[in-house]
Amino acid sequence: MNVYTHSLLHKYNIPGPRYTSYPAVPHWKFSNFTQEEYFDRMQETLSSDKRVSVYIHLPFCEFLCTFCGCHKRITKNHAVELPYLETLRMEWKQYQQLFDNELRIAELHLGGGTPTFFDPTLLATFLSDLLRDRTDSCELSFEGHPNNTSDEHLRMLYNLGFRRMSLGIQSYSPSVQKAINRKQPFSTVQKVHNAARRFGYTSISHDLVYGLPFQTLDDIHDTIDKTLTLKPERIALYSYAHGPWVMGTGQRGYDEADLPSANLKRRMYEEAKERLLHVGYIETGMDHFALPTDKLALAFKAKKLHRNFMGYTTQDTAGLIGLGMSAISDMGSAYHQNEKNLEAYQEKIISNEFPTYNGHLLTSQELATRKLIMDIMCHFEGTIPDELMELYPKFEERSIGLLGDGLMELVGKKIRVTETGLPFVRNIAMVFDPYLMEIFDDIPRFSKTI
Ligand SMILES: C[S@@+](CC[C@H](N)C(=O)[O-])C[C@H]1O[C@@H](n2cnc3c(N)ncnc32)[C@H](O)[C@@H]1O
Ligand code: SF4
Image 1: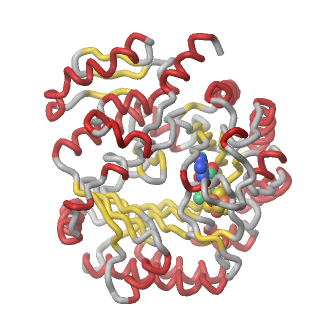
Image 2: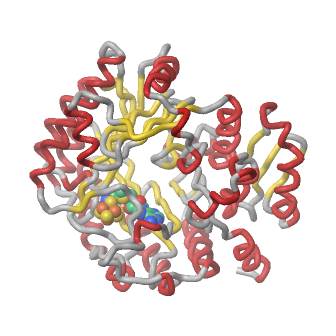
Image 3: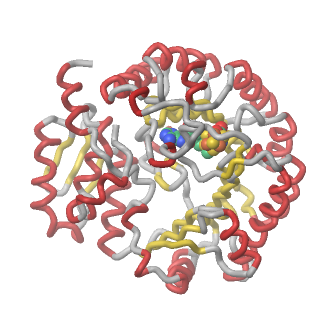
């Protein structure tokens, strides 16, 4: 990495949203949100096509990985499984009642927490019932923890139609694993990965993280070496987001001083990326790589990639329904989040209420901005819509540095992220985010962009 890139990293490593939604969650206006209006917008979004994507949040994990930013509940008590699955079943029925049982699941993703915390037989009963409402071409995927994904899980999910699995790897370095409280040797991952292949899973993704405590460049290379021996179809290479969730945990085995510097962190990404590209992966958006034959890569090339709370997807439905504690639904013109506390979520469902925690109803200007920001994040280019043209002088002013550094182009209404600008795609999207023009005080609510 040259001196020039070093200084850019320093300059642009500021807190900013990851844009899995627009507006980003800290900018949602709860005061304007009503359940009634949300359901009206949901009806409108799904008026002509009742196919939906469904995300199910399965929040339990047996052990706490101290770096983890997901909504989870740590427990070794497996008696929680059955009541939780029952509330999920009831929640889906609530939605079906709103739509006279006409909703059809076109995509299903099981996330967490740890879906494979659940007993395969209990999960199978729940899923078989739910999947009566699926479309014929429904695509099913799940997140597996390598330490507890058993052959029974793999067989049961395969028989139900699951063909995609993502495995949480993070890093193979023993010192990193110790610091984040996640013991997971390569042999364990290899065993689950190969078993999934034998069962017939066609798309396996590995989640890696760079910038973790005590992580070195050698560690990243070693993790990439091991990953490449298994050649997963997709690789997510996430930037470690250091947020408040790790601050108060007594179990945390590291301090801020143990984290790699911004420059080293970016070098980890750049060197890992170079190696992945060299062996044939393509970069399909921020932090994501896929083999050219994978659906995500094909969608990226065809500019059909989308971004939602699950990251980059090939979603072709108008709406995403999130079920379970803390799950977020996205109806295009409105977002809805479930209660983040497990007990509050379950109590509402049992009382036959929707488990609403909050949400956001988008204005027409926000809808236009959303399209622009998602185009930048997914296709590395975009066109400023008419609704935002009154802000053009501000956009010009805010992009002076990025233009001067050769990270983006702005010609008339057209925006393009340059090759050098790819690591700074979040910074470029931020230029066009009106919230970040008015509410600078809010910026520290996000983790840093690099
Ligand atoms: C719900 S977890 C994965 C499933 C399963 N619980 C496991 O750990 O294997 C989803 C992924 O989010 C990523 N992740 C979690 N916390 C993160 C953080 N603070 N910064 C960056 N990535 C994070 C990790 O790569 C993790 O595998
Ligand atoms: S990384 Fe996975 S297993 Fe670890 S705490 Fe987070 S959700 Fe649970």
